[in-house]
Image (cartoon, rainbow, N blue to C red; front, top):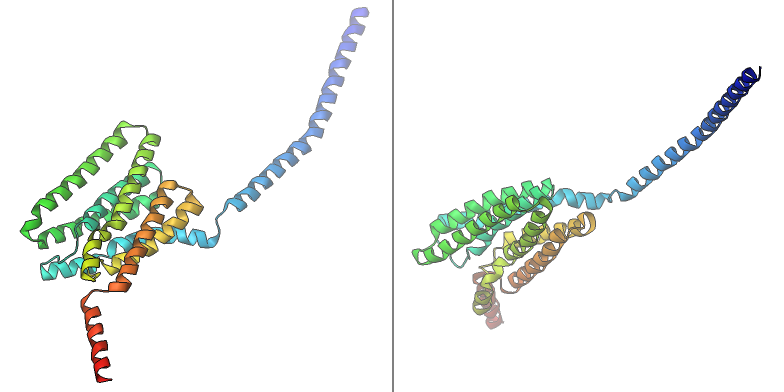
Length: 277
């Protein structure tokens, strides 16, 4: 009898514990659901807060387009060089640096998972190669030595970056290529200033291509905003800001000196009007 009574007591204890656990679990269920709901709401609110404003998203969409526009800008200048069979005072550096810049940034876009950067700069590689080919075809034989140096520099940059991408871990390779891209980007957008001494000496900015300078100003402005406010990527916004400063200097020189011939004509017309008066 005692054994049966103990068994009944144990059964009652187990049943009461199970009932208590069931009530506790059912009481806790709405709270957990509420917690999940509030957590989901907080996540949605934080997602809404993280969404960039529309104007910044528009800059992000336009930046790759202006990058391609910037690569297309020298087309009219190169077509004129091809027709005239003369490069005049135009330097080769903007076109060789366009190839190097396009390759480095296309590789950076691939490593950093930035498709906008990658594909926009692949277009720059193709167009830069075309400009380089046309310039070298129209150049005099006296600059053949300089052309070889440019080809060697481009080849060295391509091989070195392939080695970095294959040898180092992806994160390390991305940082190395990004820092190199900063240097090459500034070189590209400052390259028209390589004729600065000639511009000041001749009081003519004919060596500074206006379409490329205008496109560079727009392109660097957009990438500066996107890199700083949206991507928060030093490798994007820092060279873009420096490139913007270089482009503004070129526009300033273009506004002061013009292309030389037109400036002289305007000056002569003003002198003639003064003599008539």
